[in-house]
Amino acid sequence: MTYSAIQPVSWNEPTIFERRYRPGVAPEEAVAEVAEFLHDDYAYVFEAYWDLWTPPEGADKWVLEPSLVRLTAQGMESKSAQRSRVATFN
Image (cartoon, rainbow, N blue to C red):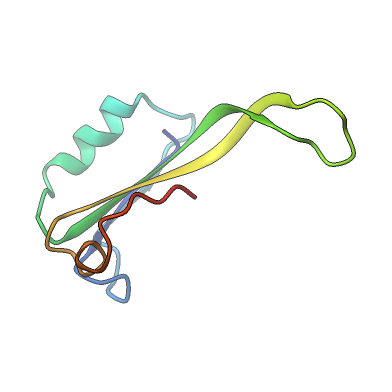
């Protein structure tokens, strides 16, 4: 993991916790840091680089390369979660 953050109730409110990890850390370490802030109306954001097959511009063959992935877990009472129960990957 390279980043973690906690966002309360609405995306318009200030972030409660934010940290960049350089170098990256294991997912367990990033999750342990935000665990003390567990609340049913918060959103938890994590970023990591995963090796994904991608089609490079102008190339014929796909290549396996690190790609930034953002994972967001929303508490059941967060405003965003109330509007949508669908997983989104950015």
